[in-house]
Image 1: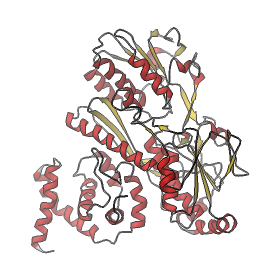
Image 2: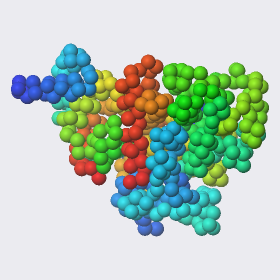
Image 3: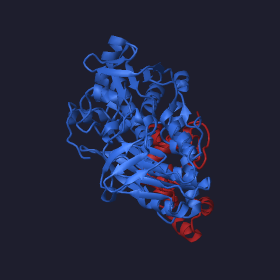
Image 4: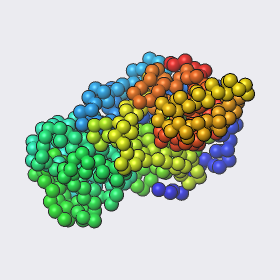
Length: 429
Length: 124
């Protein structure tokens, strides 16, 4: 993941940003010319909502903040597996931006942002409007690369859902899961690295198994066809599957299946070099890339992700555009809602430093990913990070251990519930 | 340090330690050392503005408005209690891995800044 540092922002500029120097140079121009400086945030998820909230809240009205999102509500991808497992309702994981508008004076525009003119510093919307910015935050999440799986397409995803962007796709998957009968199988095609939420596919397998087990199904199987040779929290998931769902989950790495040849959603089959897997439910999770507007803005690399400056979350192509979350190449940080929320606070601080006389402190980042394997059996992985010239680098990390007590696993699950309430308040209140 | 206050302070560590499932012998052995660190941090005049920035990380999990399941509220927390807890996480006495990893990178000045920030502010 190491990448060449390429940017118009010089090392000297970084040094200045740590003090008030750059901020005071930048401030008078905006205040003289335009009144309040304008920040436009595209994407209202954990990156965008957090950035909008912290910029508006901490600038006490000095900065005009506009949040653009195509939807009226936001369903979190994190905890969407717990909806599949009946631990959360769809309403529990669906939120809106009303409090950001009411409490912090943020303007919410409900429209799809189609493009960015970085020279004119405007964002174009699908309703034909343009919105001007002094600083732009892009937090567009992921796009699904449908054709990375032979036979798969956006149209096919209506019957073989990916459900890797929460919303209607998640509901389709839930309906199909609940409609299964004993003896019918599930086939999941897991995504290649890098992708949103590294433990997510395997937590989802656990939730599938939880539902089948609770219904007393003894003849259904869950086949996981994985393009990766190893996966996040593998020892923990494999231990949990053997303990709670013996014989139900079969995981196939590339050494065994030899490659995915075709998905035929209507026939309910996934063909591999090794064998053909049949399922009444196909959950196909393809490769991913940064959300479309990052490509439109010309900020992505060859792999389809946005290189950022590890010290600030600025795009390496444009120091007036910050990019957050899953869309970025964030070094050792995984693509997660927690990561995006953490990165948003660093970006918000730097933007306030750019546009007002706010202090800018050295960036630090954190992430924790909790996963639920079975009722009260929660596990977690997490790390602290710091920026270097090369990347955002892990400085210390932890992971749950196999063989932990039931009591500790229950505590870990309860902690994840507390975290969910915490991050939702941190994004939307 | 007055003898009486010292004893009370040790009990203040040992009792929560017992509640947190820490072996009493270990807690008693470490108590003196922990208390020295806690007192030195409490003597620092923490910068609440720096604490507010650092506290952004805490806000991802710790709700400002109310306690959440499995995660305590820290807005408005007593500084003695807060610093004790953070030092015990940093020194590896308390066991929660998220908090251990978080506290491990915090200097005395940063813990003091966080204490100044959180104890300063009512929930909002």
